[in-house]
Amino acid sequence: MTVGRSPGGPGRVSVRQAAALTGHGAATRADALLLDVREPWEWQAGHAPGAVHLPLSALAAGAGLPAGAQARPLVVICRSGDRSRLAVELLAVRGADAVDVAGGMEEWAGAGLPVVNAQGGVGSVA
Image 1 (cartoon, helix red, strand yellow):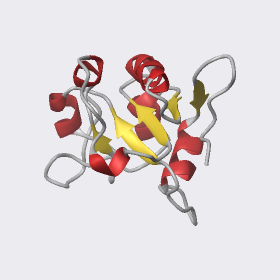
Image 2 (cartoon, rainbow, N blue to C red):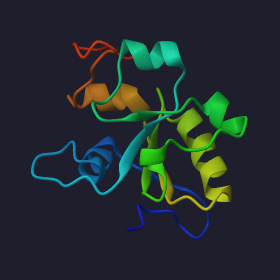
Image 3 (tube, rainbow, N blue to C red):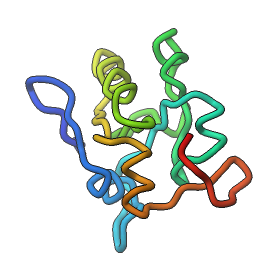
Image 4 (cartoon, rainbow, N blue to C red):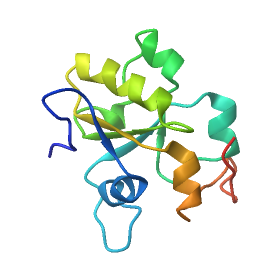
């Protein structure tokens, strides 16, 4: 499945599209993996359930994708959408099928989608 990269560059999806692609919407199946590229302290404060964490700083330094993220379509998210856009560009060079989420975790939480903290409780977007 291709998540939406356009011929002219990386694609963007809304938070609702991201939720549907990653199984966070009602009656949806998770074909894509939600990859959160925020820093550890941001991740610990709050992230989408089931997301995989790989900070942009580590990705830019050459870190590989976690095993569960390899060979899967990726929906990349950060706080507002800037870092995820950069991450998608890095991933595209590596041949990954990836799009970023416009508005990031701020829009995700604002849309009433779930956010959990590192302990599994109710999280917040830092």
